[in-house]
Amino acid sequence: MTDATLNGTGGPARQGPRMRLRAWLGQERVFRWIPFVLVEGVFLLVIIIPFLLTIYISFLRWRANRPFEQAYLSGFRNYEQVLTNEGFWLSLGRTFYFAGAAVTFELIVGFLLAMAVHRVVRGRRIYITLFLIPMMLVPVVAGYNFSMIYLDSGPLNQLLSPITTALGFDPRIRWLSDPTAAQLAIIFADIWQWTSLTFLIFLSGFSALPPQLINAARIMGANRRQIFFWVELPLLKPAIVIAIVIRSMEALKMFDPIVMLTFGGPGTSTQTIAHYLWEQVWMFNKFSFGAAASVLVLIMFSVLIFTGIWLLIRQSDQVENQQLNTGSDR
Image (cartoon, rainbow, N blue to C red; front, side, top):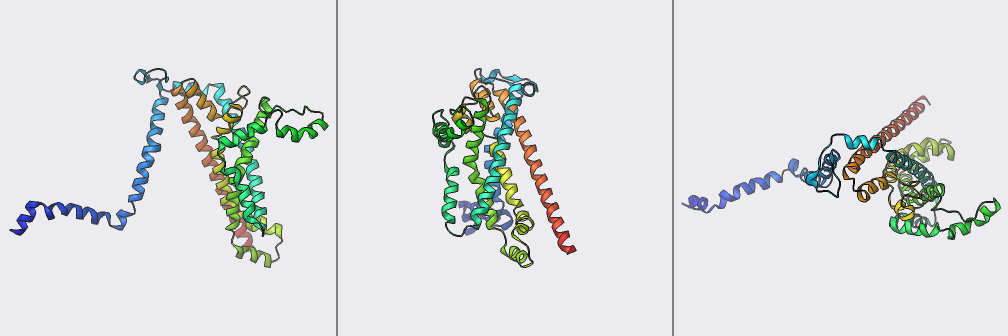
């Protein structure tokens, strides 16, 4: 009677599946997958679905000034137009030029600053705070500040006027209206702001160096130069790889300083691939063309980044193996 009544009211019968579900979720092998499933679900909604839509749109013939219902499949026509477009390749080449020059200087300067600050005993926190200020600025604010600095009658020309006058050059350098000077201005602005990031990565790498190995090398008679090249530098390879990859990915997407300083000009001398895609999509309404170009750029950058990581890791392994072989021989 009691069991039937309880079953009739649905107490245990309804609570049974809930309890079994709760017990199943409470299992360790199931519970540890819950955060993964949630994250992958968000990843699917935010990244995968828009990416698949971009690929789909790249095969359509569609402009934003026409209804989407009028779009039709055009095969690889958009990809053919992108690959035969001179502006696409020129902007891509300028992007690699800007990124290569800026990242190279940022790595060198950031590494030297991190090494110097790591060896400083007094005032280290002050130096770290000062060197991290540029990275904390909003890129739009940094771009506006540099637009004031690069004025023909701005502070930079005033500072360089004694040197340019002595060399016989015009003291009023057209930083934003001369093609060559504008390219250098873009690179310098990026170096000023993002050297802080490489400095922070390298400083964390220096701080993580094991003092036991350095002390052991010093006891064995190694000088400062030998300790750096044979002990510290190999151990800093992971930090170097991280700095190269992160800064390369960000530099290849350079957009903010272009818009704030030159807007791609004079002409198209400072137009990067990000600005070129923005112009094609939002100014010329060529959504299908922009989608195809975006897919091609993603493939190119992905191959380049993964190839660079593979080469650096391979070189790091070779250096470590050589060091192990040298140590065993001794």
